[in-house]
Structure formats: structure tokens, C-alpha cells
Amino acid sequence: MGVRRVVGAVSGVAVLCTGLVVGLGPGGASARPQSIAWVACGGASRAECGSVRVPLDPAEPYGQQITIAVNRIKGSAPRDGNHLGVLLVNPGGPGASGTALAAYVATKLPKDLAARYDVIGFDPRGVGASKPALSCVDIKRYYAAPRADSVPQSHAEESVLLGRAEEFATGCANRWSWFLPYLNTENTARDLDVIRQALGEEKISYLGYSYGTYLGAVYATLFPQRVRRMVLDSVVDPEEVWYQANVAQNYAFDRRHRDFLSWVAANDSVYRIGNTLRAAEFAWYAMRQRLRSRPAGGVVGPSELDDIFMVGGYTNLVWPQLGRLFSEYVRSGDTTGLVEAYHKHAENDAADENGYAVYLGVQCRDAAWPKAWAQWHADAARVHAKAPFMAWPNTVYNAPCVFWPERGVKPVKVGTKDLPPVLLVQAERDAATPYEGALSMRAAFPTARLVTEPGGNHGVALSGNACVDRQVLTYLRDGVLAPQRKAGRAADLTCPTLPAPRPLTPMMAGASSGRGSLAGILLGDISQIPG
Image (cartoon, rainbow, N blue to C red):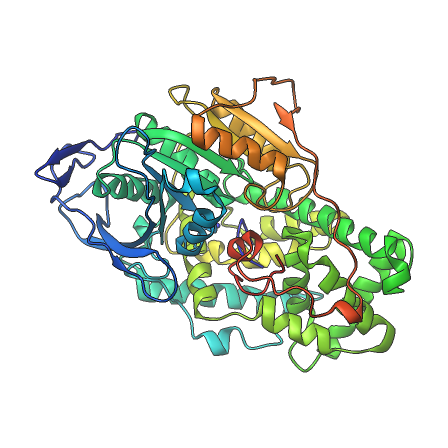
């Protein structure tokens, strides 16, 4: 699952010449000048679309080229001292498209600030509208529901899961053997600097969520002199990429799932499942076991159930929906809500498969993974005994790395003191990027300040917390941060969290339209997460 939906410090030099940008590759050789030809993206959006050519291998700037899709929501302020340049945004993944996030951010900035930035989204190499865009398997066959239970109960069931993992890795190897060696975070960060050059900017500002925090951190490490302002929200631990990061996630997602079940128990007058965490846990795992032999609607088995409720680990905005369908199944055997939630939140389409392929390509290549399945099995079994919600599903999700054709490389050592002030934003009970990652990132960047809130939603900035947003917007506008207070695990500033959601009764079932929320964008489910 990684940080996903349902994962040599040589700088480039920009020289402006007759309105075109000349980029210097890692070896100092001039790449071909380029600028971006912007055209209207179409539809109701005021975004403009374009593309940038980047070298497949940054060490060979004149070698094979690939295309990175970009979009822009242009600020209206005059291009003088009042303009703040470009704000590049990334929603994470790895494997997520950034174009929807650019439009979201542009609408969430106050009008005066939005006028002063050009907000730039991009599809990282291999993703979405960039070319090539990865696809490794036949989607209908590979994702046919119900899938095998991701929590194996026998050696034979475990072999089936390993077979699926090997199939995906082999499909990627057969189709993309020329591309996979160059698919990693460091090369994506170098693509960012080519985008910067093509935009004609000496420096960029950057807003990254989730895996986007790691991408931004690698960029800042490689190109510290190119950073104007940087906001990293829901922070990846740069010291644990990627196997240990996933182990840490397994514990954090289980804690977050228990937060949800405790909320259901606290609202027992609505859901009638039980008024204690123990009762709610028993009911949830009994439901999961029942779906092994009798999938809801013939499509929602235990693995699909995990995918549906995993969304609740990212955002409590869906807790009322999840609580209602949970109650309907447990109390009356009604599977309607489960099937509807599967189609809304967990059914995989071509974009999901593309994102998964890039996720694996980046994470399997970024760093070394255990090559012996015995270690994966032992770790999954050990964690499952204490934190069963995602221990096996997350292990199975990442299992193609066992069979990946390209071995992991040594990751970039993230960190530098040569940065302007950096703003880190973190929910203390975040499941996808646990709190320890923000502390680790703050240690790597001595100029960083950490703003937290006690909640658990993944993606905090520009999603409704007025205290957090005030810090983010002041920093983007003026470069001003809260005073540094580093004291062990304490944040430099802690904001109040948003109130817990209200339970959803049958009369309220259609109350939230939910289009365009940050949670939906980060989860790749833009129209379905309530806002």
C-alpha cells in the first residue's frame, strides 16, 4: 500500500537565452533548449496544459527522451516584484497524477495569494498523461472480484498471493524493461528541475503531500539553491524507505482502524453494533471472515472489504458511510452499502493500475527490499499478531518487489542545512505516514518547522483546519514560520484538530456530494469522498 490511494547531488543550471531555457545535465553538457507551449486544457477549467521533454537517464541528457505532462493555473498578478513565481504541487503515490491537485490548490488559496502564484501540476514519469504511461497486466482479469483473500490461511493460499505478485512484476518486466531502470525518486526529482528550467524560473516553491514530501525532500537535497518555499504535508520518514516504512504503516493503520471502530462504538445509538471497541472489533472481523465464503453481491470478499475500509484509515470523512454499511451488514445482512462502496472506493480501473505500476516501479527501485520471501512472511505474521488490519494486505500489496527485475539502489541521503525555512505539516495519528517520519524529516532539515494537529487524517493543509491553513498561507505569502521550539517529539506548533464526524443515519445517506475534496484527490477518488 505504501503512501498511496485505497510507493550524486549535482544541480542543474538554467541559462535564459532569447526566451528559451538551456538546461545543463549532470555532466555539464547542454541539453536542447525548450520552453512549454501552453494550450487550454478544455472543459470548464481555466487550466492550461503542456509538456516537457526530459532525458530517460539524467546522466545522458542527449539520450532517449520521455515526456512529462504539466498543467498550470496562471496567477493574474503582474510579473513584477509582487509575483511569487511558481508553486509546484504533488499529491503523492508514488504514481499519482498532480493535475487535479493543481486545480484544487489554486481554488483553495485566497484570491490575493492565488493571483501571485502560477500553480503547476505534473504527472511524474510513467504516470497518466506523461509518455510513456505504464500498464503491466490485463485489468479486468487481474482485478476480477472477489480476489483471493490477502490474509492467507494456508500455504496454498499464500502461494496464490505470491503467484499474483510475480505475475504483476513479470508483466512490468516484459513490457517496460527499458524504462524500469530509470524509474525512481531521484530521477523524478531531476525531472522537476527540468520543469523548473522550462518554466524559466530560477527557484520554485513546492507543496507536496504524502510521497510528495519525499519527492520534495529529495529535490531539496539535490537542488537546495533552487528552493524558494517548501511545504511538506503528511511526511514520509526519509530514513525508512521503503520496506521499514511499510512495516511502520501496518501498526499505524491498525491503530487508525481501531479509532474508527471506537467511533462506531461511541455512536452505538445509531449503529447498534456494540458500545465497546471490543464488540465493534469482533463484529468487523466476523464480517470479514463471513465474506470469505459468501462475498457480498458476488464481488466484495475480504480483500475488497479491506480496500473499502482502508479508505477510512486515510480520512474520517468516510467514517459515517462506513459505519452505516457496516451496521446494515451486521444487523440485517444487507450488502447494498458494501457493494456500492466497492464501486465507489475500491474498484480498480486503468488509472489505478497505472498508479500501482509506477508505485511499484519507484519503490522497488528506490531502495533495497528483502529478496527472501521468508523474511516478508515472518514480519507479516509477527505484525499481524498485534495489528491485524493491514499487516498482510500491505505485505501482499508490496510483494511484487520480491520479483522485481531491477534491484533497489542506494537511496538519496536526504538532508541539508542550505535551505530557506521549510514548513512540515503532520497529523499525529496519520496512518499512511506515521508521526515519526515528520520528526525524522525535521532533523534532516535544520531550517524546518513542524506544525501538527492531534487528528489522523492524511493531508491536513488546505482541507479545513483554519489554524493549520493560517500557518501555511502566511508562509506561502511572506515566508514567515512559527518560532522554532524543537523539544524531543514535540511540534513547534500544535493546532486544534477538527471535530469528529457526525454519524450518518439512513435519512442523511445522500447528504454529501463530496466533489473535489483534498481527501478524494490524495486517494485518486476525486468525486466520491465527502467534502
